[in-house]
Image (cartoon, rainbow, N blue to C red; front, top):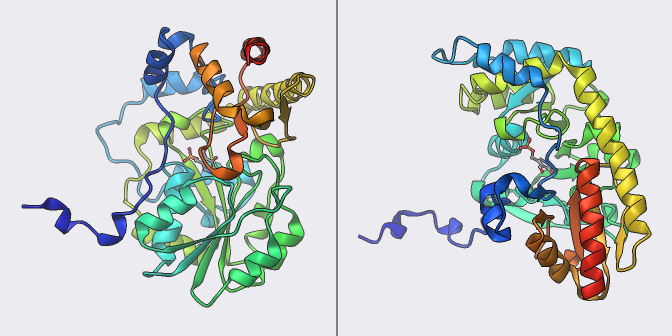
Length: 363
Ligand SMILES: Cc1ncc(COP(=O)(O)O)c(C=O)c1O
């Protein structure tokens, strides 16, 4: 039989999420060993997790037991970390799972979701997979959310808007007046604070006041746990209850739970690395600003969006890849002259700058 006849019709046109290649695949492209590549394409933490995580994972004795579906210990630990009561906190397999859960909890067929590109691709991806309707309201010239256009686009079937602060890939944050104005609307306002620890700016304190505000966070970036998949959402208890009811019961696996609890007990170490990344961001910004052909934009995240002159973003991307340095190129019209570069260790900055100097000489 033709198996595709059984597939959901609205998924036929789905544009799959473009995940980054594995280090092994990148190594093959560059023709060098995987340990020699410089991976600056997924905003990962170059310092990795706390060394205590590895130890705790090795010592954990209950991998044969299902994890706690109520997430009691992680939620308590996150209450201490965030200063927000645990009744507002739900843990997910990365911020990605929470994006999916929020949409599954709210969308009926054809309900609308507003996203403001260029931004993180998972909002549009999850909306499509769930069968919602995506309304894209492009950011203005300075990559700020275009509030008048957003408000104009809102209709009775608009359920959710995603705001990202700081935004990936543009690095800028959202202003409080825009947030407050949108919170007055009858929609769920989801603020994705995946890069909070690098920016220090948050709207989480508004959650107890606004039942339509959800703040998303993750341990993928600042705590170096991207591979273990652990993030959390801060939201009204009534919404949290619905998400709790519809989630896979054991969504946080035992290893992720151990890693989260251990990380939150080693904040000095992890925040020291966050500071090093922020300092390195500023050093890379200065070095790139002094070069011809590339212009970095100020950023509050662990990455810089850089404009590349003369339509050369793709050749520069390829030139770097040949040298084993992988950054992010987005194949969308608005970003076709840009590259997003994640912040690495100082030696990665030096190698990147040297490679760019060579590439620009040869272009
Ligand atoms: C804005 C934003 N939200 C969410 C995520 C995904 O986070 P997680 O690894 O917690 O799923 C990313 C990852 O790059 C991101 O940039």
